[in-house]
Amino acid sequence: MDYFAAHPFIELSRKDMLKVKFSRSFLPIIYNYLVPRIKAKWGIEKGMEVLKNFGKRVMKDILVYWMPKGKTIPTVLQNMYKFIFYVKLYVIKDFLDEKPRRWLIQDNSCPLCWEGTEELDIHFCVAMAGAIEELLNTFHEFGYTNIPRVTVKTLSSKAHGDPICTHEIKEVI
Image 1 (cartoon, rainbow, N blue to C red):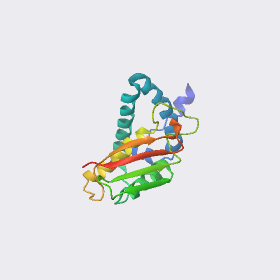
Image 2: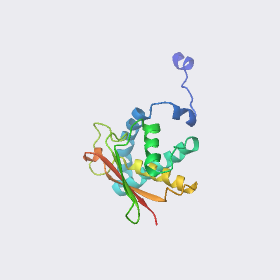
Image 3: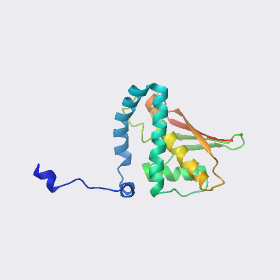
Image 4: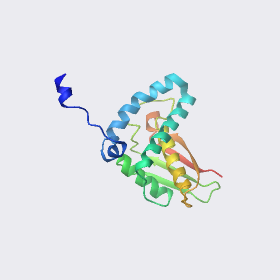
């Protein structure tokens, strides 16, 4: 017991935690325990809604201390992935000629769908959709005219057995 008294846990503020490069390894471990419990408690449909809202709340907390640079959806998302997860997005496809406008994000190194994770009845990284939605809608609320109000839906995830994680961003008209 004396060891713990002499070496207390370091208390970090949320702002300080953003400077620590642990999110790439730490987040998936905790998230991997969280998803099955949420699914067991609320079922698949409600569980996916809970996970998406979890992603939104996490992004709200991050945006209090940090805002990515950029004025377009691809630039903002590349900066978010680089700063928070230390990875580059694989592909961002835009379908700007469609109404409503939409974008597809494809991620081959998803920070939530780490190796060994399998959830075949839900898309494991639906929290990413919530985080992306919150980020882009916050930009819109701050007056960035290039970034519309959006909804984000997870179409595929590696933990679901798909080869790549894909999120669809759709403009809200």
